Length: 373
Ligand code: GMT
Image 1 (cartoon, rainbow, N blue to C red):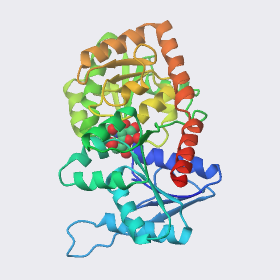
Image 2: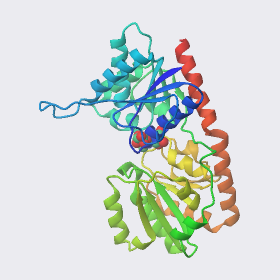
Image 3: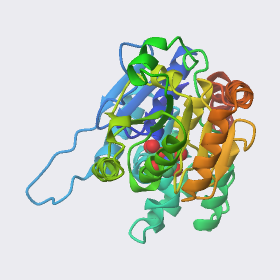
């Protein structure tokens, strides 16, 4: 198949899923054309069968804002026409599904199927704003195929947008051969020289991630046992978080690592992954932690309960209930037998349910199904 993939290229789960999917499909012999305004982060190095087409957005004194939607549509038209795409796969509905729809109309008789994957805030937050809602609803309805990354997100889409559409759930995935616990004594030693426990959080530091809760949980854990916190990523909440650490006088035990490309070694060196989000349609970073045998303590929102099994691979508590999340963390970190069981269960769940091969196959079959319609 010849597949165009359009996604956000920046640090974020939807771009990671789109890039990893494209790479896996290319390895299976499909021709993949990425279309975006910058090279997606995980598309490093040369990979046969993968092509990248950059969307150029011209500026003009009259425009107060960059006109990305029509520029992307024009690029999709160009690529679909000359590379004879069968499918364009839009990751994150805004504005990718809209540009894809526009491109399809312009292409007229040339058959091009649109598959849209809903990732999260495109449905739960941004898409619900009155200034986007009608266009979002229309773009989803007009897609030839729609997938959502969790059952939660599928249900939210159907109810929030009052859509009667067959939406398939195809979850996030992880490369279990790459994401596995590796030898990490050196890194552990550098982070926690006196054998402290290591807690970790990875996100884009937006308010929905509740990174301040991560710090509050850590503060309570640290009062019970020597521990360190690794905060990976960057975003609008970072300064507030740094301030909170200073206020709690725990800044020497918290490391803000900023954006990191190499996270497997950090996950492998850690004992517990914290994700107390306010909204989370799936939680890809938690899955990556589980593949590295790092149990997860999370909030109970969105798709997280579809990933984290309470009392088996980690623990789940209400949003904002930092005391309970801290209690769970302490319980797990002080019970060696239970910890080992949870770590093994986490890996097992990642391998059995969310392995790249399983999920990429599901996407392939889904494409076939859409093409055959
Ligand atoms: O919706 C977002 O916040 C952006 C998006 C992204 O690009 O990071 O994240 C969403 O998509 C990921 C990949 O499917 C999911 O793992 C995240 O749970 C989801 N984020 C939210 O729902 C907040």
